[in-house]
Amino acid sequence: MVDTIRLATGDKAPDFNLGNDTGARVKLSDFRGLKVVLYVYPAAMTPGCTMQACDFRDSLDSLAEGGYHVIGLSPDSPEKLAQFRAKEQITFPLLSDPDKTTLRAYGAYGEKNSYGRISMGVIRSTFVIDADGKTIHAMYNVKATGHVAKLRKTLGVEDR
Image (cartoon, rainbow, N blue to C red):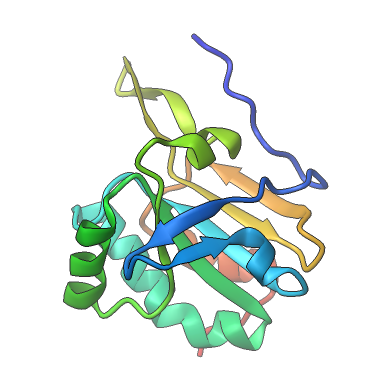
């Protein structure tokens, strides 16, 4: 198995400059001074990714009250992300990383073991980044179901 570099608590979160679902460019440094939840998902409009995106959408108020800004990241094209946003009424930025450079920098792309089968792909992950750009939490191989509720509990953010 190929070793994938993973972020740990206290690591500087890699900056990025990616297109979003509207074609605008978004950089992590745009959020300096703010707390960010960057969540990585394999593919828009698939059942698990849709469930997770809708969980984040439905928890946005409580996360915002806790001071957190949510950003979604996948290798999908901006056009697919725009369709996803419209269909599911997603109200936070969805970033496109088709060449997977940022996914690799976060350790969220690499070898995965799914039911004993090794393959290369996006590793469903969540990163909580503080106002100074440091990683507070780096969670890999998270489950789509129930992850947002667990994250809120970890962050001490109440459901609204």
